[in-house]
Structures are given as C-alpha cells and as structure tokens.
Length: 150
Image (cartoon, rainbow, N blue to C red; front, side):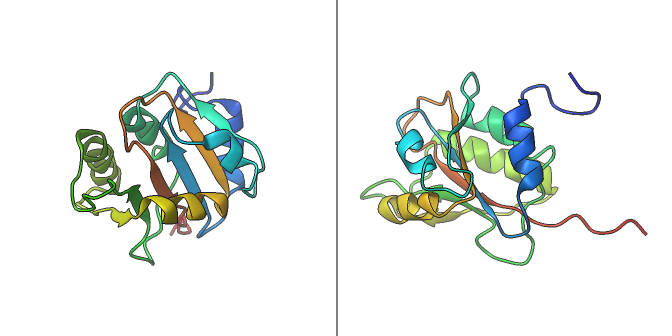
C-alpha cells in the first residue's frame, strides 16, 4: 500500500502507466476481448490485469494518476456496437461519467469501429483486462502531459 495511490492500481499497472509517454495509447478491455493475444503485439508485450474491477472502477483508478491528452480529439474512445455505432450501452455511459469527473467537464469519447479498435489495440502501449463481463466494455485512453508547477 502506498499513501495517496489508489489501492486498486497494482504494481504492474502503476509501472506501465508511469512508463508511458505523451500520446501513448492504453487499452482497457472487458473479459471477452482477446486481450492476451493482442497484448503480445503491444509495446509492453504482455497483458496486465485489473480483474476484480468493472470497467468504470478501473477507469476511476487509472484516471486518478493518468492525465488524458488535451491536444487531440481522440483522447479516449469506446468500441462501437456492431450495427449500432451511435448506441452507448450502460457500461460505456459509466466510463464516460468517470472521464467527465476526472476531467472536471464533459469530454465525450470517440466511437471506434470494432475491427479498427482491434487494430489500434495491437499498436497500443499496453492492454489492461478488467473483470467487466458486459459486452462492449472496451476503451482506449491516450496519455496526456502534466504541466510544470508554477
């Protein structure tokens, strides 16, 4: 346990988040996503887990330490539902609420078509698999910067 660090962030996840640089992409996946095989193609090269958490709980913990990119429109994304790209299921609405809370204002995620999401995940810095069992609990976060203290 560390003071001031969310205890849901295990050492491997913290190390990964710390090592990422500005613009690097993190994938947060549900339990149905082919996370292990896709993670082998990432920069990190292996799968990280936050398996006892929902997507929203994991997002809350991650965004307690990870700044989201403010220079791009695709700072965060959600896997679109097949055949219903505009539909936002409850799991995605919950994650959107966590993003808005962390950012202090509404910042809508972009939608990413399913197979484009898989391609993006293979090129990501890392994949973290959660215990989320609801469908379409897959997200992309692009790391931002922390400004200097004035």
